[in-house]
Length: 124
Image (tube, rainbow, N blue to C red; front, top):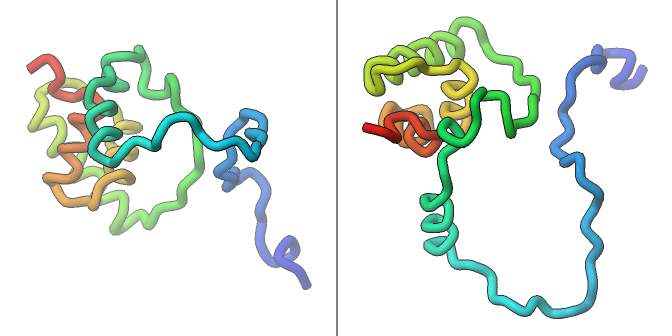
Protein backbone atom coordinates (compact mmCIF):
# COMPACT_ATOMS: atom_id res chain seq x y z
CA UNK A 1 0.00 0.00 0.00
CA UNK A 2 1.60 3.26 -1.17
CA UNK A 3 1.27 6.87 -0.14
CA UNK A 4 -1.28 7.50 -2.90
CA UNK A 5 -3.52 4.83 -1.37
CA UNK A 6 -3.21 6.10 2.23
CA UNK A 7 -3.54 9.85 1.64
CA UNK A 8 -5.74 11.97 -0.57
CA UNK A 9 -3.18 14.14 -2.32
CA UNK A 10 -5.61 15.58 -4.85
CA UNK A 11 -6.16 19.33 -4.87
CA UNK A 12 -3.23 20.47 -2.74
CA UNK A 13 -0.42 22.29 -4.51
CA UNK A 14 2.67 21.75 -2.42
CA UNK A 15 5.26 22.60 -5.06
CA UNK A 16 7.53 25.56 -4.47
CA UNK A 17 8.66 25.88 -8.05
CA UNK A 18 7.95 29.01 -10.01
CA UNK A 19 6.12 29.10 -13.32
CA UNK A 20 9.20 30.34 -15.13
CA UNK A 21 11.51 28.08 -17.09
CA UNK A 22 14.61 26.74 -15.40
CA UNK A 23 17.60 29.04 -15.54
CA UNK A 24 20.48 27.68 -17.57
CA UNK A 25 23.80 27.55 -15.80
CA UNK A 26 27.04 28.47 -17.50
CA UNK A 27 30.64 28.16 -16.50
CA UNK A 28 31.16 31.92 -16.78
CA UNK A 29 32.01 33.83 -13.65
CA UNK A 30 29.51 36.50 -12.61
CA UNK A 31 30.65 40.01 -13.47
CA UNK A 32 29.32 41.60 -10.29
CA UNK A 33 29.83 40.62 -6.71
CA UNK A 34 26.79 39.38 -4.81
CA UNK A 35 25.09 41.96 -2.63
CA UNK A 36 25.72 41.85 1.06
CA UNK A 37 22.82 41.30 3.44
CA UNK A 38 22.86 45.00 4.36
CA UNK A 39 22.70 46.04 0.69
CA UNK A 40 19.82 43.63 0.08
CA UNK A 41 17.90 45.03 3.06
CA UNK A 42 18.42 48.62 1.90
CA UNK A 43 17.31 47.80 -1.65
CA UNK A 44 14.17 46.14 -0.27
CA UNK A 45 13.40 49.18 1.87
CA UNK A 46 13.63 51.41 -1.21
CA UNK A 47 10.91 49.38 -2.96
CA UNK A 48 7.29 50.47 -2.96
CA UNK A 49 5.43 48.20 -0.52
CA UNK A 50 3.01 45.60 -1.89
CA UNK A 51 -0.08 47.32 -0.40
CA UNK A 52 0.79 50.59 -2.13
CA UNK A 53 1.91 49.03 -5.42
CA UNK A 54 -1.13 46.76 -6.02
CA UNK A 55 -4.90 47.25 -5.81
CA UNK A 56 -5.60 43.83 -4.30
CA UNK A 57 -3.70 41.69 -1.78
CA UNK A 58 -3.90 38.84 -4.34
CA UNK A 59 -2.14 40.80 -7.10
CA UNK A 60 1.50 39.87 -7.59
CA UNK A 61 1.24 36.80 -5.33
CA UNK A 62 0.77 33.09 -5.95
CA UNK A 63 -1.76 31.02 -3.99
CA UNK A 64 -0.61 28.12 -1.81
CA UNK A 65 -2.66 25.86 0.46
CA UNK A 66 -1.93 25.67 4.18
CA UNK A 67 -3.75 23.52 6.71
CA UNK A 68 -3.99 25.13 10.13
CA UNK A 69 -5.14 23.94 13.54
CA UNK A 70 -8.52 25.62 14.04
CA UNK A 71 -8.20 25.99 17.80
CA UNK A 72 -4.68 27.33 18.17
CA UNK A 73 -3.52 28.74 14.82
CA UNK A 74 -6.71 30.45 13.74
CA UNK A 75 -7.19 31.99 17.18
CA UNK A 76 -3.70 33.53 16.97
CA UNK A 77 -4.39 34.82 13.46
CA UNK A 78 -7.60 36.49 14.71
CA UNK A 79 -5.59 38.11 17.54
CA UNK A 80 -3.03 39.40 15.05
CA UNK A 81 -5.72 40.80 12.75
CA UNK A 82 -7.28 42.67 15.69
CA UNK A 83 -3.85 43.99 16.64
CA UNK A 84 -3.23 45.22 13.08
CA UNK A 85 -6.63 46.90 12.84
CA UNK A 86 -5.99 48.69 16.14
CA UNK A 87 -2.43 49.66 15.24
CA UNK A 88 -3.00 50.90 11.70
CA UNK A 89 -6.62 52.15 11.94
CA UNK A 90 -7.36 51.10 8.36
CA UNK A 91 -8.83 48.15 6.49
CA UNK A 92 -6.61 45.13 7.06
CA UNK A 93 -6.83 42.32 4.53
CA UNK A 94 -6.88 38.82 6.00
CA UNK A 95 -4.48 37.58 3.31
CA UNK A 96 -1.92 40.19 4.43
CA UNK A 97 -2.37 39.08 8.05
CA UNK A 98 -1.70 35.47 7.06
CA UNK A 99 1.40 36.40 5.05
CA UNK A 100 2.82 38.68 7.75
CA UNK A 101 2.23 35.96 10.35
CA UNK A 102 3.99 33.44 8.10
CA UNK A 103 6.98 35.77 7.62
CA UNK A 104 7.27 36.81 11.26
CA UNK A 105 8.10 35.01 14.48
CA UNK A 106 4.42 35.46 15.51
CA UNK A 107 5.36 37.98 18.18
CA UNK A 108 3.32 41.19 18.14
CA UNK A 109 6.36 43.31 17.26
CA UNK A 110 7.62 40.99 14.51
CA UNK A 111 4.15 40.74 13.01
CA UNK A 112 3.65 44.53 13.00
CA UNK A 113 7.05 45.01 11.34
CA UNK A 114 6.03 42.64 8.54
CA UNK A 115 2.71 44.48 8.12
CA UNK A 116 4.66 47.73 7.80
CA UNK A 117 6.93 46.17 5.15
CA UNK A 118 3.78 45.35 3.19
CA UNK A 119 2.72 49.00 3.34
CA UNK A 120 0.42 49.31 6.33
CA UNK A 121 0.98 52.68 7.96
CA UNK A 122 2.94 53.78 4.86
CA UNK A 123 1.20 57.13 4.63
CA UNK A 124 1.14 57.88 8.38
